[in-house]
Image 1 (tube, rainbow, N blue to C red):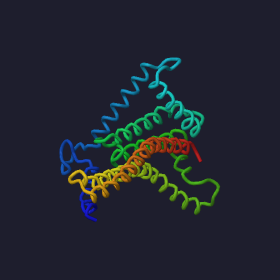
Image 2 (tube, rainbow, N blue to C red):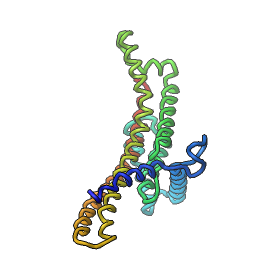
Image 3 (cartoon, helix red, strand yellow):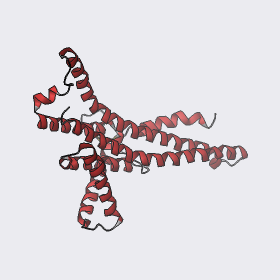
Image 4 (cartoon, rainbow, N blue to C red):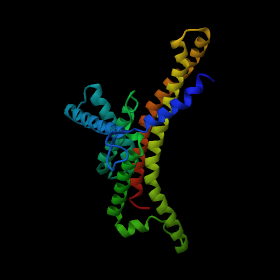
Length: 265
């Protein structure tokens, strides 16, 4: 219990660090820039560098691992998300889908670098992304069907009026819930993953520290437990690398689904 007695204090420090304090301004002022905002801007710069570098090296027959990797991702989003989900006319939505995927995955991956934070690790960024998607697919639906028809088609056709009004209200709430679920899903997965990795890193340190400060048989026995925590940390880190890509894919896929649904019934 002596080793774990400091765990609550370290967990509080971890949560405070993940809070991403202000870099410019203060939390009490109406304007401030947090650590997450800084890393989000860095991710945006990295995205621009990747796009322009790939465009400059693009050729009829792509050469080099970098260009091939970018083209593979573009082709995957085009084929499996754009054409596979939206279908006819998907080309006009491809720039949005690709931008969302690359932006999210770059933010997620940067957050896995020690000392960095993912721009998607704060609700403000994920909500802004979700809001862009929400406005986009509703605008597309209104453009395709007209405002009156789009509002009418929120409810199902072919049912009696009282039932239609009830289901219409439920579907309207569901429509706005898409905005919340998109934002919360991405934020919660990234934030929770970093809490778990941080906790494993703290436990590894706590069990290893007694051996570093004073060598003894008891400290050696305690230090062996740190190996298990370290293995869990490595396993969790590898899993978070996968989650970083999966969450970007899921967000992009749901965007395509909502665009497809906005066409009609």
